[in-house]
Amino acid sequence: MNLLPLLHIQGQIQIRVSKIIIIGPAYPLRGGLATFNERMARAFQKLGHEVVIYTFSLQYPNFLFPGKTQLSESDPPSDLKIYKVINSINPLNWWKVGRTIRNVNADLVIFRFWLPFMGPCLGSIARMIRKNKVSKVLAIVDNAIPHEKRPGDRLLTNYFVKSVQYFVTMSPFVKKDLSLFTAQNISVIHHPLYDNFGTKYKQVEARKALDIPEKGTIYLFFGFIRKYKGLDILVDAFGLLPDIDDKYLLIAGEYYAGEAEIKDQIQQSPVKKHIIEHTRFIKDEDVGLYFSAADVVVQPYRHATQSGVTPLAYHFEVPMIVTNVGALPELVPHTLGIVTQPNKDDLAKALMDFLQFDIASFSSEIKKEKKKLSWDALVKSILEEAEIES
Image 1 (cartoon, rainbow, N blue to C red):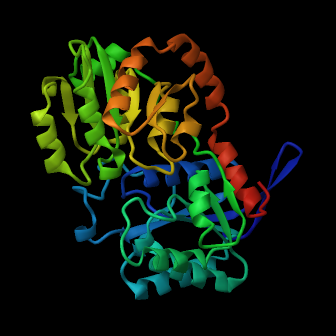
Image 2 (cartoon, one colour):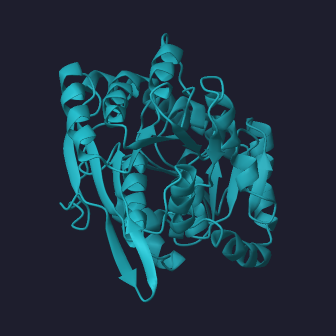
């Protein structure tokens, strides 16, 4: 890889090529963070910059990982340079990786921080990199205070935060939490839309492919299942609907917590025959089928700072029902969905109210909103925050 700054000439415009390193989950790891980091790398490449991703050879010890596997079954991306070298629990590895990246003298190193557990690893690597006095170190912070708190979280987060120069969040609520750890300026950038999951299918074709009812209203719960996401509230609310004959709740996602309790709850539900369980990891190539099959996406979260499900709903132009927590209401104005409270009675009312939702108005408004949430806007904002030419 050529490590020297270059000037590309496009017509009469000179563009300085920056060397950018992204540190965080990426292939062969799976999940929303990996998908985001890979898509962000492509956006930087589109602007003409050199990009390398450093990801984990060991992200979590198995006893800390609640899912079935951390690895993707998809083919590796052919258009990205990804080095699988970081061991999250080996301090000698942190020193080695930090020294390697330090010697690259990249213009910008972007860390993805989402969990206090990663604080020692990522904070140590960042400190090593900054010794070169060249690289600017920026963090995209998904959570400064985790949804599921553990002793020592603040200490670990603080260790990482003190190693970083620039901060970006995708929610004002994360900014507020992060400000407890640093007096540095913190930028808030809207989460861009995922546009790498293909285009929308015809609804009947998607339902046939998923082997679910072709007619009726389908409420979709999508994503990893954890306590704070409130699936139990949704199951109870769905059971309160007065006329269930042509309505279905489709649960699509892998259990990360509470599997036995939720399964028992579904078995006890009076409408269990109308609850469809696809409780497994949803591959990237299948995401479009679920959003195309749904009439509405439901996010019944107990608490949240932001959500990667909302940009998916935007991309596939599906209305949303969300609870009035965190940044969710800000992302779902009344023309794009319904905001309710995280309890079964209010949520049941919202499920019924959706049947009168103005789909025509939604279709025109969602197209306007989508234009504001581009990957170009994200990466240009990051470069501006780090004072690097785009």
